[in-house]
Picture (cartoon, one colour):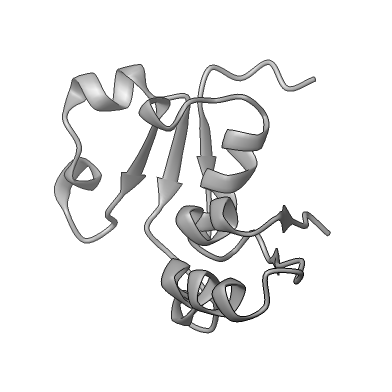
Length: 102
């Protein structure tokens, strides 16, 4: 087991957020580091309190998927099992019935 106090997760913030959440780390203990700003745009306290620092990067393909697309599809096809890739945003993974980590 990793004995680190903090994890810098990059390059994909969504994969980091979904992985951390699945590991039981609350969203409140994750912050997003904006590499274009000093200190990532975070306060000293936010950095100190974070367990995971998410690099503000993402896959442009996975960014296209939205939670309302899942809602609309399931309205028409409620028997469907929706599987999301964990590089999709947190809300898409939460709406899907499965979020596969492989």
